[in-house]
Length: 335
Image (spheres, rainbow, N blue to C red):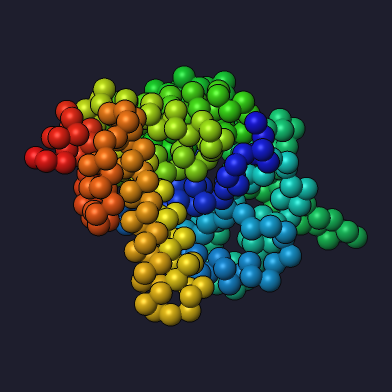
């Protein structure tokens, strides 16, 4: 399976942006440890997305990338902006180093602050390793260098990633597998193995939900393999006694909510919008619960279908959360 063959369009940028929002400190600690040690982390850090948009809005640099701009404080008390470029295209970009320089000088010229540019290369071409942009003409010379991390270099240190207590190790592992593994069945096995690591590392519920979303985004499966993946996650949650079943359903509910919003907007009325959102959520919640129940208890009797049809969204989602603990349909619906 290739990215083009997948039923869902592959979205590489969104999971990286979310991962950097949640785990910027862990990102630098794993991939740029020398820079991590220069930052005064107790003072916190701030995203500067609006400032980045100001200097990239008219930049002729091709497609959008998973670029982030974050304000940090150095140990000496000075303010520094860290500009992160994540190149996740399957094919390397010829003008990547030039783009690094373009963003660097635009930020420094516009805001007058020190800017540290970092490059993360998630492609699989061994020879693509840009770390400098140079220009020279008639004794006028420019040389701009930047730290670069090539993710496939971690393949030789895979055991270190598996043993690492840094949450960003899972992001790197997921990205590498997303680029390397094309066969659908193998991708499913890899995805299950990474989710298993989530439950074995003692993360909080919030961390598991966040990392699950990122992994699910990065490693997408053909739709016919999704039910097997979902069933494997249910079994894993039962095994680990961690009922975070809504880590899967939450993603699907968000999609249904968005579909409801779009339906309501098309109707052009506020009442239609609210109805579209509500109906979308209710239909999706009912569909998800029916799938869960069928996998857990087999063919459903008529009285269960009637209960599902009559239930509102809150009740449907409550049953979804309780299904792992229910010994039978009676205990779930009639306790």
